[in-house]
Each structure stands twice: as structure tokens, then as C-alpha cells.
Image (tube, rainbow, N blue to C red; front, top):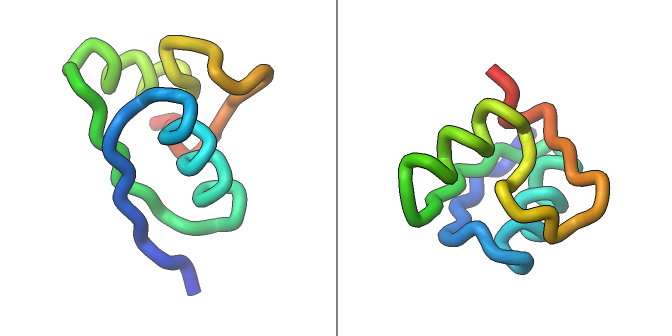
Length: 62
């Protein structure tokens, strides 16, 4: 059964947490500072700044 998590921020720690949470089949609500960042993450399935090399997360694809 998938668990639900919430993460605030889009820095390196938040990005790593979101990746770990979703890679393990859990759901996450990810709050970021502004709409532009949220739109970019949703559209590209990766954060605006490449904190984690090769970060791609299908959980954020529409």
C-alpha cells in the first residue's frame, strides 16, 4: 500500500527526498516556492536546477 508524503522546497534535500519517496512507489505532494518552478517540474519531470544527475521522475508526468 502506497504511503502519502509532503515535501516543502525544491532544493537538493527536497529533490532527493522526493526521488526516494516516489522511487519506492509512494505518493508525494511537493510544495515549491513559485508557480514557475511547479510548472517546470510538472512539465519536465525534473527540478529546474539539476541537483541530482539524471533525475527524471515519471511520477510528475501528466
